[in-house]
Amino acid sequence: MMRLRGRPAGWCDHIARMWPVDGIVGENGAFYFHYQRKKRKMVRRYWQSAQKRLQDRIRLDKLRDRILKEVPGALVASDQAYREADLAIDFCEDVPALPMAEVEKIAAILREAGANAKISSIHVNAWFGNYNKLSMTRVMFREIFEMDLEAIKEMVIFCGDSPNDAPMFDYFPNAVGVANISQFKDRLSSKPAWITSKPAGYGFAELVEMLLIP
Image 1: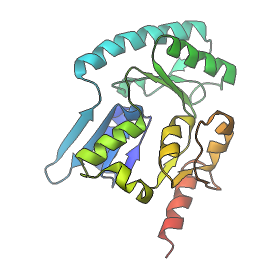
Image 2: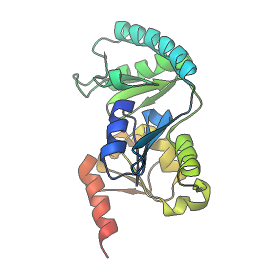
Image 3: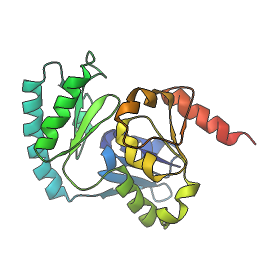
Image 4: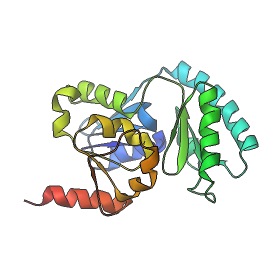
């Protein structure tokens, strides 16, 4: 099993070490982490070099300051301190929910500056670089599992919950969305093949239960 997250490197390090997973892709494809349990060694594979990530951070910080000035009510995500490659702007997790027009304004500011901007269920995530969850998943399957993702994609089940999962919904024939994905149906460029009846983690548990039924 592997995890895909828009969440930060700090979370991903913990998950890779402590959860029963073989690896995790984080920050919308900026890296994968794979913990070698017998060697007690963490493999950290980044899409961009350390120097490039540092340069991008300076650019993202300038965009952060502009957004906070121009979009009242938006805040930097509470987990930003643990991020290595992206910027996360909170629009409803720890702040009163912003109107979608304001959320779209945040994304527009980022895109005008040349950044990738993806709206999740709680954040607008931004980064510089030609990667996403799918591209880094391909790399991880090749380097860690020694598998060609294209050859086995029909054997893979992906489960997602927000618009930034659209590349995965489009690629995997057996993609599943938890119930709360329906609130984004008008903003999904690609939709999952199935949607659970329950939201969030309960929806994932529903999927696992279905898979375990003999």
